[in-house]
Image (cartoon, rainbow, N blue to C red; front, side):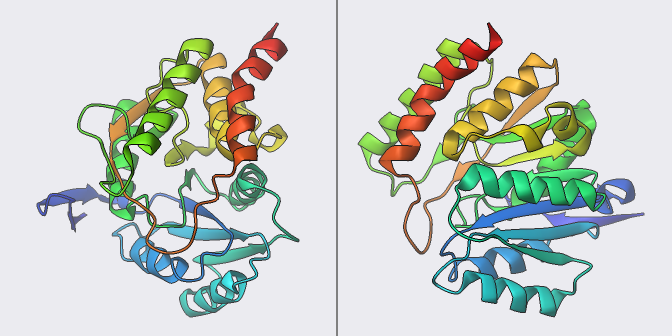
Length: 260
């Protein structure tokens, strides 16, 4: 049995039943995303993935995001959506570690990490899952830097240049063989997260993404990238602070030092 799903290009594709009902948990870290969270949650539950669950890890957002998350969980049911209320703003990496750890404990076969600001389109998830299953990959990255990918037109040239330089800089230092080393849109097998011991990662921000990729390559796991359009956030402010940028810049040296 299969269902038909509207692809990004407007064409319908077939979703076979084992794919459609896979146990997928999407982890959404939030801090002041009150305007964006209902939109992305509704879009996720509109996907033809009947086994999809959502787990929000909120860092005690002062704009009431946590309360909105609780209301959405009540609407969709505790079996489909859960909320982790964290004590305060502890960083993206810590939110993902807590959320991924809980998703694995709850029996997720696949775990998705994506931004809550609508820069990552939920419509890519069926394609990412299908790619992972077809290629026997351990993780699929929604990449901004492979052929066919694109960045938001709203991005200024210097922002694009900085992002591109950061990726090139990390790839050269760590020799990862991954085009988008700081990507925050990924679909993982739970077995891969266990293999890299994700709960032991202590880095934060974009350096968290780099360290996850590094551990994945070091353990001989398979990474596949697919092109996406990376949109600009709709509401709210970017969490990319100078501290986050500096930590990300130093992470390759830290990883190389540890490996020695």
